[in-house]
Every structure is written in structure tokens, then in C-alpha cells.
Image (cartoon, rainbow, N blue to C red; front, side, top):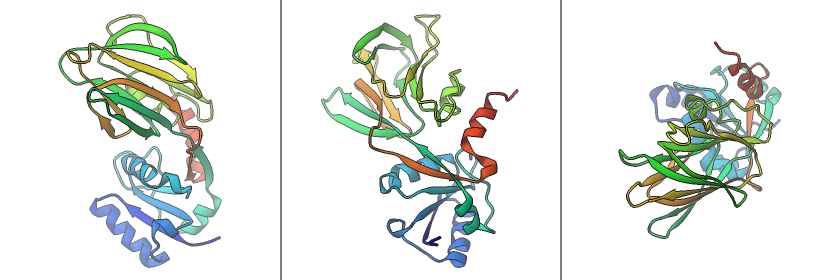
Amino acid sequence: MSARIAFLASPTPEAEAARLALEAAHGRCAAEDADTLVALGGDGFMLQTLHRHGASGVPVFGMKLGTVGFLMNQYRPEGLLDRIERAQRTVLRPLEMRALTESGATINSLAYNEVSLLRQTRQTAHLRLRVNGQQKLDELVCDGVLVATPAGSTAYNYSAHGPILPLGSEVVAITPIAAFRPRRWRGALLRSDTEIGIDVLDHFKRPVSATADSHEVRNVIEVTIRESRSQTVTLLFDPEHDLADRILNEQFEA
């Protein structure tokens, strides 16, 4: 196995100290020359790493040195090469968000967890939902709505009372956030290859922002979301911390 490992750290003293110690033990390698990326931090830093380096196709082994570490392995510097060699590979396919703004700009972004639309002011958002070009909800009055991947279904989606999706289910969840009308609509489960369109009604009076993971676009008037057909990333997990098992276990937490 090649030992060309690039160590990437979140900007915290603990993560930086771990990076320096690991580089002293295994050598220093630039991300563009590495066979494996080791991300040191929390889930937020893992998402940053995927957005920054995901297109390279280099697998990422995360170690938790942050507050939340659902996408990370436990931090243990000893036996790192053997852990990487034995790690289970999990392939994630992100969502592609295309957002049209009031100014006429079109902005594209990827989301590994979720795309969320949220009201920008005290007034509720009024949204219209389309599925594969067919109008399904004439008007959703709410604080917002999100579309979550299986990997992201235990994050913001779950906090908004959305369903947990098994990894590999090839399903995405649409989950309303504090919906006022229709009162009984609790969201939908759709095939991952579905194209979801969201129109912002009365956008001057009721402005809405769209966020793909941490990339926010303000004053959107239309958002299209679909699973990427070309982009994937590979995460590496210790066998005892398999991501699919952790998502499954989340459904039985009291």
C-alpha cells in the first residue's frame, strides 16, 4: 500500500497538533499528490474537505477531533496505515443545486448532506414544489424546506422530524420546516434520480435563501435539485464504525 497521505486539519489547536504529529510520523504530502486524505476535525470540516477535494477522486479517512463526528472515525494515531488498508469504502453521490436569484444570476453548488431553503425575514416562505416537471404542491407555507441525502438524513433533516434513510437506499427525503399549510403534509420520499423544482412565490415580499451544505445563496426565486450523475466521493471507515451501520442504529435510538 502506498503511504502517500495528506493530513488536513480544521483550524483548532487540537487538530493542528494532531496534524503535525502525524506528519512527523508519516511524512508530509500535498493533497494533489496523495493517495489518501486524512481529515482531522468534525463533520463540518469533513464536508469542507469533500467540497474542496471531492473532484480529485482521492478517498478520505476522517478522524474525529471536533464536536460532531458522524462522518468520522475515532482519533487513534497508532496503526493508521493498517486502519486505512482495512477500511471499508463508502461511496457518496451528492446533490446538485442550481439556484436562480432575483438578479438573474444562476449559481450551482453541491450538497453531500442537504439542500435547504429558508425564509430570510420574519414572514413565512411561500413555495411551489415540482417533481420531474410536474407540479405537486401549489403552495407550501412554511419556514422552509430541505432535500436530504441518506448520509445527511440524520443531521438537519432529522432535527426537522424528517425520516432517516438507509445508506444505499437510492432515495432522498423532502422535509418541510415548520409547515403551516398544508398542515398534514409531512414531506415525501423520492427516488434519488428525481429532479425537484422549488419556486419561491412572492419573492420580493417573502425572500428566501438556499443553502447547499454550507454554501448559501440569498434571494433565490427558483431552485432545482437533483442527484449528481458524475460526481462521487469515497469515505473510508473502520469496520466497527461503518457508516451504514451507524445510520441504521440511529433509527433505534431512544
